[in-house]
Each structure stands twice: as structure tokens, then as C-alpha cells.
Image 1 (cartoon, rainbow, N blue to C red):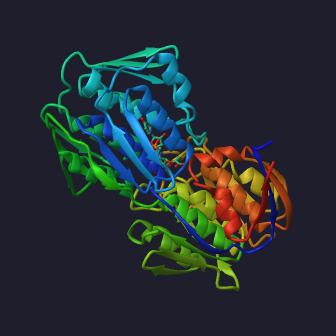
Image 2: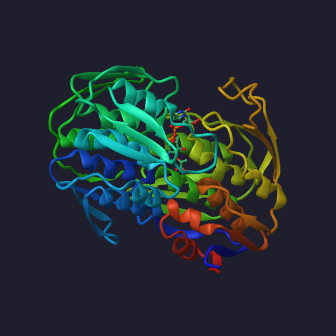
Length: 438
Ligand code: EPU
């Protein structure tokens, strides 16, 4: 029963909360520690399930992890890295997609790696073909097994020229984590350049890597023979920040997010302003609030950085149900990220999904039968409902809807949200929400 949250909604969220390091950076920086000959220290680490999963996987491979969870500090010592048992890796990987990023570091350290079938949110097919192509190009031998993928490096991995068909975040990280210790130069065109990737590059540079980020999505890496540990403070979580900002807007509230920084949030802040939300960038965070009166409908297209992040889309759509007029949302990163709209409709929202590319340009999913555009008509009052969490960001969006709705909603499958939102229930209570578990 611990997996259920009762939300008595209809009250504006008001107050101050703190956001720590980005889930989608911290897990990668933890993997990078495997590449060092000495220990690393990572600060500003949130207590979320993805960090626990990666900690478990690192420990299985012989990394000693010392954690000060309240201080948000991890000490990662890879001096005794060793192969892990397939069954243990399988059991530990859980719902995460991070194991795929262990490939390069393990191939360098041990000459082999086993990657279990991957989890992650059900927001599209989420293939790993780019990852495997990259590893093969470096010289790895990849064998598909019934329960995962076995990889071997018959000799030192070799630098190479790679062009990504789409600027995938994970594939860019795969390449970075592999190229830094490969022999020779690697050149990637079509790279993703998300702030979390730039912070990973900063970590690798601290470790001794030579990486240049050129214009037009080109990254060049000069392989080195040896890397050391790093000491680094993770950048803040811009997805969690946008989630709380959207919650403030949808509930008519006023939320200050300490730990939020402006440069990584610029695209979101522009959109937040266009919808009619107000914000104030402060020394140690950003205050987001609903100024009263009508919100404005918008046309929105998700994209890779520096575009509007796909992970910001779901929380903001809940706020758009309260905006006056028709909003158009075109999701161009994942083909299946509107499943969460069913629950919103059940709560009274008017959201229609379309297979066509609405709103501007054609994307990879046009003419391919994916419901990847939505029209939101508002404002519509939301009413309480029984809802089930579909995926991490969709689940948080359901929570926002329940907080905005009058009456008591039950949100099931709430533990999925622990994957990426640190102490979210405590934060909700701190913002005045009436919520209880079980
Ligand atoms: N893709 C392929 N083949 C591949 C890899 C990706 O076709 O081998 C496609 C995907 O199917 C998708 C697109 O490329 O349509 C973009 O995927 P990308 O590889 O960029 O995503 P990812 O690395 O799997 C990370 C985050 C996601 C975030 C995306 C986009 C982590 C652990 N996950 O995923 O975060 O949405 O980048 O910014 O870093 C979340 O935090 O809830 C989350 C889903």
C-alpha cells in the first residue's frame, strides 16, 4: 500500500524547496569514475533510486562506494574493479537504462562487459542501436544473448570517426566514455550538447581527458593512456526544477526552487513567460509564480538542446490545461510521450492527440502512426480521480494534476517517481500540499 499517494488537491503550492544534482548527469558521472586509476568525489548527489541502482552496479564491479546521503557526497574508489556475475548484474539493473553506459569503461578496464536487457520509462521503443554501432566501430565484439548483451575487446579500443543520425544523449555519452581511453583520435558529428553532457565532459577533462567541443555538433577526443579520479559538484536538475515550476503554475501557486540555475533553464523560462507565468532569478535559485488572471495558450515543440526539453513537456502540459485557448504541442524526441494524457482527460482536461506533425516542422515521427502531437483546450477545471503512474515524468505530471484538482485523488505506482524526484513527498508537504501515503 506504500505505493499509493492520496492527494487532496485544490490548494496553491507555496513555499521554498531545494533541488540537488541532475539525475541524468549524476548517474553518468558515477559511471565515469570507473575510468580513473584513483578515487573520485561527487557532490550535490540527490537521494533517488537511480543513484542507488548505479551504486549497486558499481559495487558489483568492485568499486568501493562511500556515501554521505544527507551531505550529498559520494566517494567512488575503482582500485579493485573486477567482472561481476551475470545474474547479479541482471538483478541489480532494475528499471534503469544506465547499464548500457558501463560498456566502454568496462571494456577498457576488463576487456569485457555484460549488459542486461534494459529498463527505463515506456515512452517509446528506446532502441540501443546507436550505442552498439558506436562500440563496434571502436572495435568491440558484440554478441546478443538471451538475457542481454555480451561485449569483448580483443585488443585496445581504437579511436574512430562516427556520425550520429540523431543527436542522442545516451549515444553521445557512450562515445565520450569510450573514446577518452581509446587509442588515437575520435571525431563525433551530430553530437548531443545537453548541459548534462557538457558537465560530463568537464568531469572527464578533470580526469585527464582531451576533449574539444566544436561548432555544429562536432566533438573531438584525443585518447589518453591513463585517467585519474575527479572531484566535482553536479549541476542542478533542470527537469525537476521545471516540474516544480509547472506545479506552481498549474495550482496557481508560488514556489522558489533553490539550486535552480538560469543558463540551463533559459528555453524553459522563455516558454514559462509566454504562458503567462512569472519568475525571478535569485542568487541561489529561481522563484516561479502564477500572477493571477488568465494563462495564455502556446505552440510548443520539444527538441534536443538548446530546444525545449522533452522531459519538460509533460509537466507543462498540465499547466496548459489551465491556459485560455488552444495550445499545440509537438513531441519530436520520443514517439510515445502522450500516454499520460488519458488520466488528464479522466480528470476533465480536453486533450486530443494526433499522428500528424502539428505546429511547425515535420519530424522523424510524421506519417508513421505515432500519436506525437497534442492539442490542449483550456481552461478546464480538473476533478479528482484514481490514477496510475505510467512513467517518471508522466507520473509527476499526474501528481501536479491531482494537486490542481478539487477533491481527493489516489495516485498509484508512486514509487516510480522516487527514481528521479528526491524526497518529493516531503517537498510537497513543505509547499502546503495535503498528501498521505498508503
Ligand atoms: N535513439 C535511437 N537509438 C539509440 C538511442 C536513441 O533511436 O541507440 C532514439 C530514441 O529512441 C529517442 C531519441 O533517440 O527517440 C533520443 O534518445 P536519447 O538517446 O537522447 O535518450 P536517452 O539517452 O535514452 C536521456 C535521458 C532521458 C531524456 C533524453 C532526452 C537519461 C538516463 N535519460 O535518455 O530522460 O528524456 O535523454 O533528453 O539520461 C527522464 O529523465 O525521465 C528521461 C527519460
